[in-house]
Every structure is written in structure tokens, then in C-alpha cells.
Amino acid sequence: MAEGKGVLVLGEVVEGKLAPISLELLGGGKKLASDLGEEVSIILIGDEVGKFSSEAIFFGADKVYMVESPLLKDYQIDSYTSAIEKVVQEVSPRILLMGQTFTGRELAPKLAFRLGVGVSTDCTELSIDPDTKELMGTRSVYGGNARAIFQTLGQPQIATVRMKAMSPLEKDEGRKGEVKTIDAGITEDVIRTKVLERGKEEIEGVKLEDADVVVSGGRGMGGPEGFKELQDLAGILKAAVGASRPPCDNSWVPSTWQVGLTGKIISPTLYIAVALSGSSQHMAGCSGSKTIVAINKDPEANIFKEATVGVVGDWKQIIPPFTKKIKELVSG
Amino acid sequence: MAVNIIVCAKQIPDPEAPPASFKVDPNTNKMVVASSVSSVISPYDENAMEAALRIRDKQGGKITVISLGNKLQRDVVKKPLSMGGDELILLDDEAFEEGDAWSTAFALTSAIKKIGAYDLIFCGRVGGDWDQGQVGLAIAEILGIPVITIAKDVEILDTKAKVTRLTAEGYEVVESPTPCLITVTSELGEPRYPTLMGIRKAGKIQPTVWKPQDIGLSPSEVGAQGRKSTLIKLFQPVKEAKCEIIEGENIGEAAINLALKLREIKVI
Image (cartoon, rainbow over all chains, first blue to last red; front, side, top):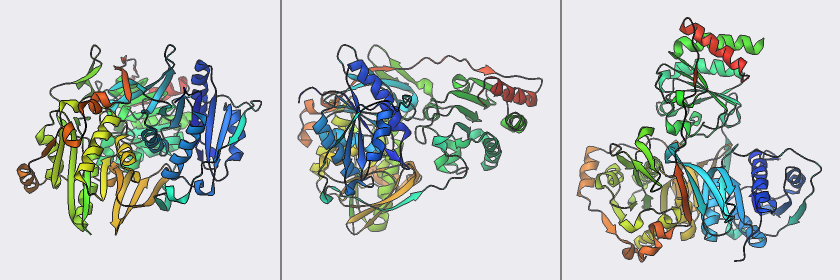
């Protein structure tokens, strides 16, 4: 196979808009592409995706490849893999990036194994080796206890990127780009699984993954009652409530609240960690937070190694006056 | 309908062990795990085993567990048997060491082909050591069977699997023809504890051990030599304890000072 060129990004549409991760990939992909002196392009898949192409260009795409078919209206792993495979064959990119989302994390390995190339998942940093032009992907391994830099073999080099690990470019409506339609020739027979039902998770308040501020509790909360106090604090800060693994395992809170490698991976601006020790597993889910605040009675707890500010003491004595003061400050 | 199930279960160092027990040796670029850390079955693989057991409990059938590694500890890899598995196949050889998702999936697939008939293959959604989440998808792609990832509930209706999987918005219910491969998440529920009877039964089961040549592979196709990714560098960023501890006359005042500090640094 001839040497590929350019960085190709898989676009995702969520709730009628290009997903934030897709804009981040365009931003990160543009940087890699300029290091290579090449272009960044985006794949848009669906039944009608033309309306997103100018947005993609405004956020940095030099080219937009549209794959449209009524069969691609809803996401399905087989049809979407075939659609991306077709674009890769036509475009021969050097690098293919997807988000570490529910779709990207299954599409990227599936496609890689179909194409016979390697893939690095859940990368938090990407760079180009200036000598070899190879893609280097940095990711967390061993439950957050170490980091690894991987290089994959074969072309394209495929990687998935964690949400908020990269920054989108400023939207520029003056940017120009080319839009091209690719016929992937998707037929019914490639689609093997059928979605019978889709449902939304009912959440009160702010969604954990989207929240700018998150208040989390750990084992030291001692039971479900303590989380009510955290919910009051969260309400004032328009924050979401999270938890480390023990409260979820003990059914004090729903398992969907779990932050960590085996739960949700989030990067809020402010993360308030209450009565949690800060295990590697947990930190792997929130270490991208801009500011971490620790409240823990154990001054040796690992969370104090991760936090910017903190108070040593029993949360039961700290949270009520803290919440009261926060309320004054926020409303004042 | 009796169901033939294969479960892939990996032996790893206990990921819940204290962070200080994981040290990278910069000379070899390898993770050195303190000898005090015990080996366990990767947590999501136990969820995968639980999913398999629930189906067999309901419909009957057989569960074959496969583990791949080098010098696998029998007491660890037998745990899925003591949970209720029927057979254990160990791909146990030094040639399997230092593999990546590619070489691991390739070897597991060769073993699955040798086993022959199966209706379902279960894997955990991601391994608790390298955290890549690739092997299940790889096996399905190599075998050419449908794959459903991140499942929290699995039912078998005739020749179809009905799977509830997590999505960004919540969940979806997916129907797939069998055979298919399903990766399982912890939302499925706690894996059962082995019973005394289960442990006794597992003790009597002799695992089948296969070397690369037993599954038609040469040592150059497995482990480190079969990789499609290169580990350039393994490292542990140094964390400086830079946390500013907020104090006060008493704990209540420290709490108020913390709130004031957050305003001062403009995070609230």
C-alpha cells in the first residue's frame, strides 16, 4: 500500500449537532496534520449529514467526506464500520482518529482488525515523531498507575482520543474546505444486529459527563445519607454528584455515579472530592480536572497528592459550614 | 435450548493493589509488580463469567473458559471453574508473553476454532491491566461473527441473543443472531462468589493446556512477535505534593476558609 497522507477524523453527530469530541479531534488533528505538512479531513456518516459540513469546515476541516444512505440513519456497528472502511480505502489517510466514545471505542478496534493494522485506544496525547513521521499515542495503563506511549504498525495508524484531551480551534466562518460524497455501497446484508429499543437514562440535575463542577463522595461518606448533603452542595454549584467505587458497590448511590477507570471518565473545571482516598482507579477517571479540592480526615490520603487545595478533617464537620459559605458567595 | 458458551478470562496483577506496588523499570520498559500483589481474574472477565453462568443456569449447556498467558497460576485461573464453569483451556507458554491485543486475539481465535461449536463468546469490556478494550472486538472480527459491546443484560431466545448495552444516552436493546461475541460491563451485576462445592468441583477438573503448535500457530505468530503495536515508553509521571492545606481556628472555620479560597482562585 502506498504511503498514506493526511489526518482523517470520524465525526459524530449528537442531538442534531457535531459532537464536542469531533470538534476536539479536528483541533488536535489539525495540529498533527500541520506537523506533517498535510491536511485534516472529517468523515460524516448518516442519512442526511450535509448540513454539518460547513460547521466542520469552520472548525478546521480541509475536506469533508460525506457517506449518506437511509441505512446509515441510525448508528449500527457493522454498517458504520463498512462505511469508514470504504472512506479509508478511497482516501488512504496516514492517521485515523475517533473519539473514545461508546461508538469510537468499538468502531476503532473493529476497523483496525478488519484492515490488519494496530490501534491505540483512549489516548490523552498524540504527537508525530519528527524523524519517522509515525504517530505516538500516550495513554493511561495499569489502572492509572502508569502511562504508556504506543506506536501502531500499519497504515492508517488508528487511535481513539479521550474526551476533552484536545482543544477545538476557534470557529472561523471564513475557513474554506472541500465537500465530497463517497458512496459506501452499504446494503442490508452487512447489518447483522438490530436495535429493538433505545432508552435514555433518567438523571436528576446535571449530567456527570457534561458538568463543569462535580462533587464526589467516597467510602468515608459512610452511607447514602451523606450523599444527600453532597447533593445540596451540588445544587448550589449547579454541579453533578459522583462517587468512587465503594459507595456504588455498597449501593449507597447508583452505579452510574461512579467516577473512575471502571466508571465515568470526566474532566470538569472543579472536582470536589469528599471522604475519598484517591485510588489510582478513581483518579484515572478525574485526573483531567482543572482544580481538585480534597476533604479527607486522613492527611496521608493519596487525594492530597492530587489536589490543589484541601482541608484535613471529618466531612461531617466541614460540609455544612462549607456549603453555607459557598451559598453566600455564589448568591452574593 | 442448551447453550455452548466460551468465556475468555485473563489473569492479571490485582488492579486494586496500592499504587506504590506498581513500579516501572526504566531499563526494561516493563511494569514490575510487588511480590505482595496477588494475581486475580480481570474484574470485567468475572462479569463476563457471571453473564455466562446466568444463561447456563436458565437454559443448560456448557461453559468453556480460556485463559492465555505464561506460567498461569492454577488457583487463579480456576476461579471461573469454581464459580461454575465446566472446562478450562489454558494457552500457557512463554511464547504467549508480551503480546498485544492482536497477538492475544489471534491465539484465542485459533483456540476457539479448535474448540469448534459455540453459540456465544463472552469477554470483559476491557482488561484491568493495559486497559485497551480491544480483544473482544478483535476475536469477533477475525471469526466474522457479530459483536455487541458493553452489555449489562443478556438473554437467549431461540437462536438469537437479546442484549441490553450501555450507550452515551442510556441504553439500547440489541438483537443478534448467534453465534456472536458479547463484551460485558460491571453494570451486569456482581459476579457470584465460588461456593465450597464449586471449589471442590473445580479442584477435580484438569485444565487442558495448549501450546502455540497445538492451535496451529508458530511461536513467531504469538506474543511479542505477533504484535501490531510497539510500546515505545512506559513511565510514571512524578507527582509533587503541592496541595495547599487550608486551616482555621477550628474545623468549621477551615471549612469557611476553603470556600473563600475557592472564590479567591476563581473556581466558584
